[in-house]
Length: 164
Image (cartoon, rainbow, N blue to C red; front, side, top):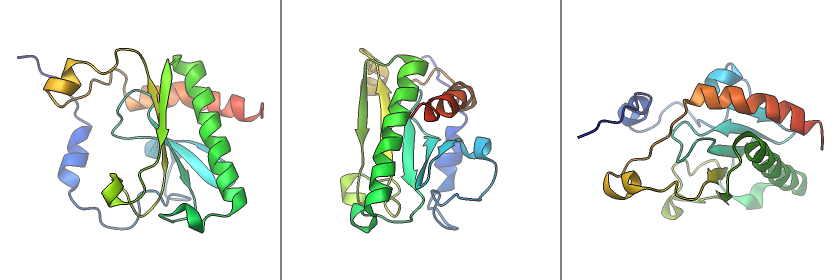
């Protein structure tokens, strides 16, 4: 049997129930690189998902701590979607995916892992990226480390945000 090592997952496994506040309320919570925070816009920010489905799995998160779109103003909603678009452009340039899954899970019943703070997932996809590992071993193979992905994407956010 072949083993796949993913030592960063132990933090998630051992963490259990979260305590100490919302993981997405991060305005001044520490260095951006350590938090995998790639980009800040006026009303939201972009970060790498620490437990990605594929390389480059991003999340766009409003600064406003809310679980519903109804609490967001028009400027916040527009900024959220423009930042989703920017994130997709960055991933297209960095990784040439053949498609994307973009979406939100609002509420625990809908599958939200963090249901108290809404966020948009942007998952780059390639033909054949779901393989036997996902089907038979309930595991995903992510071939690039989070820090390597961060270092590849960060300069693209800085460059492409100036284009808009």
